Image (cartoon, rainbow, N blue to C red; front, side):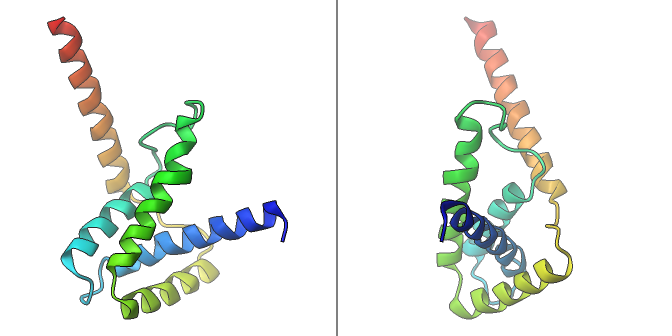
Length: 129
């Protein structure tokens, strides 16, 4: 398998696993800690806004390449195997039928609020200097 093909397969699995967490977060068999982490990961993964904008060289893609896959992996490890299996099946079905990923308005709002809080904190810090 070529590098490009393996990268595409990895990206498809990542997308599937983000959707898996989307479905797993509402499953009654999911523990509360896993629900919380899954909700945060899904909100970030499906947010139309990145925490670190992609136009920032190197760092902009760091969250997409390292942070997000690591958080998805951790959240999946916290889920019971039966929940992962059922949620993956739903994610595969979603991807086959809808083709597009859902969007998280809440995720976008959270990212905007984080940026506003950081900007405010920086402004206060600079004013006190």
